[in-house]
Image (tube, rainbow, N blue to C red):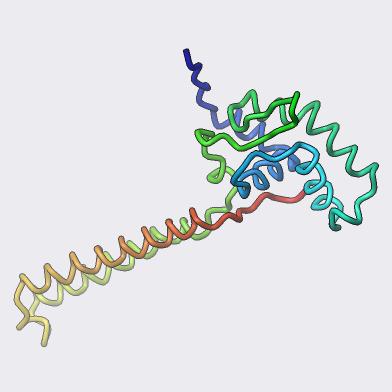
Length: 180
């Protein structure tokens, strides 16, 4: 019998993501195709946190991050259903069915502008339609069918652009993980 992970509430997600080390962990694991060793993850995180390379890390910096991942962060992320972690083998991976964390991390600037684009297209279409109804030349001579096609086409083109933008955003493996 497969036990399903409970849905995380918004507060639970914010609690989990309140730690920059957990955000870094999710970011790193999201980029990996296969499970990684906890030691490798600890080295990468320590390098990021110390603004250096893995090769230049001190053993103390590696150990400090490893211990906190082992004792605190990996178990908390596993309990939340975001990762799989085997303490015996040291393998850690992002779960394929993990709840989506990106909306809570990303600043969403790109997505927030789309309502403005839709509003602008609606306004332009309303002006076009009113001008055609009033008979403003040359719009008064255009068939209502053509104007209807222009209105529908403009929203279709905008919807396609929005979908392409979202798809590119989902394929972009970077997201705002915040300050350490």
